[in-house]
Amino acid sequence: MQTLIKVENLVKRYARRNPAGGQEELLALDGVSFEVLAGSTLAVVGESGSGKSTLALCLACLEEATSGSIWLEGKDICKVAEKERREMRPQIQMIFQDPANSLNPRWRTLEIVTEPLVLRGGISRDEMKKQVYALLGRVGLPAETAKRLPCELSGGQRQRLAIARVLALEPKVLILDEALSALDCSVQAQIANLLMELQGALGMTYVFITHDLGMAAHLADEIVVMNGGRIVERGRAEEVLREPREEITRRLVAAVPRLTRSPLAPIGR
Image 1: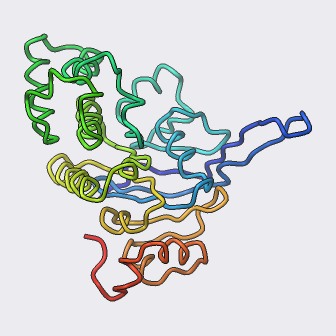
Image 2: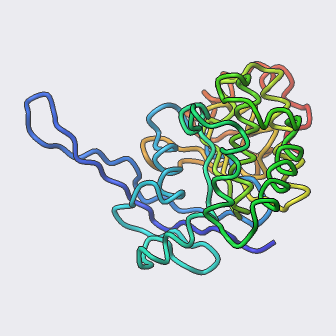
């Protein structure tokens, strides 16, 4: 497999006001580097405040890095002109923890999935409608869902809708920022299985942002562990989970009882 994404020495600093009223600098990402192979899943794991969500926003071009590079198929999206960056953005899409915040509450499902097809252009209204129903079917939503508002859908259905909408753009990379954490366990498993099916069928590449090492074990080929804006541990999912080197990784493993109860059980795919 070829490298699809290469991140080199990524730094992100924020300016914030301190309690005394002055300005201070927050270092959210401190020299982060890694690669993601095409068609694979990289899990970025860490506690709250570790920098993993800031990393996701930088990868999705929703935040501008202070310095460093993000290479997508040989192009540094941090360095290209804004026009070219806009053209590249559809290739890297993001699914958030609460899809309701990214779905227009006044639009029905049909309109929500149609919007990215309109932005892509080049197809008729009739063809758009066919594609919308095909996308809904691909993510496991029945055709009658097209007439419903987001508020009329369950949490799992809204997450499926969010996935259908980004698939309309035919992205090469899907970033999932805690996309399963707000769902109950049975729905988490259903969406995780859907993601794996889509990866097998479409060759999708995932960057899976999570604090849950158990779900990372289920989905990921490789895991990187973040702490204080830095990557402190990385490796194949099974290796990281079986023999964690860093204290933060051991703490994350200990937080998932099903991992600690069966240390010799197969982990990952």
